[in-house]
Length: 26
Image (cartoon, rainbow, N blue to C red; front, side):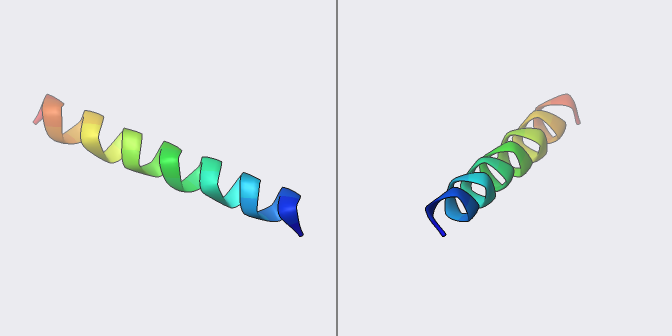
């Protein structure tokens, strides 16, 4: 299930990026 792990990692990194960008905007 290497592909699943890769996709999950990408999603988590994207969520973190969105959260950090939102914090910067606030």
